[in-house]
Image (cartoon, rainbow, N blue to C red):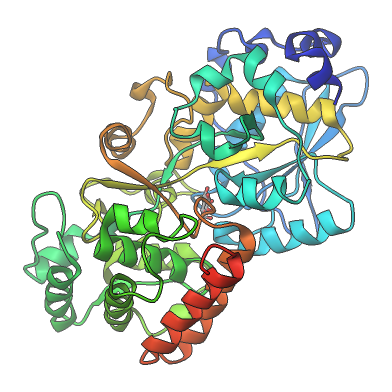
Length: 464
Ligand code: GAL
């Protein structure tokens, strides 16, 4: 890669036509940040959307950006980043190759097919952790970014927790743009009040207390815990129940090689028992919902009390229409850690990669520069419900929820999400997902489910 050989400063000079200095390590561009985000029409697999660009004398060259940020609560942040990109890099246009489907289930399948066919997008969304390192780096599909991290100063700006998760043998391989939290339980204060349910200060300390609250909610005729379809929402619930049952240290122990927490042991068994019970309080139509948003909306509509979802749900609730519901925090919706996870921050981070064999490597470097920059992250994260993957963003730009998340990120025990790519590579996650799908057909089959989880660990090669 040209820029890797030359170092990124030289690369910036080489592609300097109309480049704005900020993305190559200078200051932010405040004017761009004050403008409303551009709207990206929902993209589909069949019809990628080409966004408008500034007027140029030569045609801008396309940079194809692949993600799953299409729907409500997802698209606003991407639109803001794209808008800033085309302002700062008018020599490029963005081809938004997003594939709809929360959690990336559909997108990752499409991406895998494209990579197998030798047709990588110019950059794609990849979770920090094993999804990047154990999947795309292991598959020799992306290039290291040492020069970029050094010359832009991004290597010093990203939180120390994140750097090892996007690195292999000391080489960084992707550019994290956000930090999201998985263990958030959203609730409707009015539904709780009607059922005379009060959340203990700091949250439910265990699942049994939560189930007792669910019994009261159920008695009022409401769903206690709304759930979306299989795809990622079920695994998202599963990881939260497991962590809330066994705690941070034992959860981490499931993913070490060899595991220090036994997949066949009592902790996993207890987690599965709580998961089974949690499922019994969910809506019967979960599997027919289109994605995570309708399940979260059951809470804000007052049809359900609680929904466990990452903090992209916050901006779905609070962002203005058409992508958000324009609701008021603490009045129309509120949040608490998922049961048993006080003091734990279950994290995930979206990042972008530099593929091997893509069409527009210079355009990719420009996109990565924007994604890494303070200006890019301050444009993206407040609209995405996430916090910056840099330590120098201005907290005043963020919602009350996100300001709390920033404090918790700094003080809590940080553990990695399974559903969102941190602790297991795509193959291991797929094996767990298959076990989950089978389990859902008969939740009484807890032993069979635990055996399937243990087998998935064996196939992953860490359980002997
Ligand atoms: C996660 C992703 C988030 C959000 C969410 C729902 O995997 O990291 O940024 O998009 O899926 O789709």
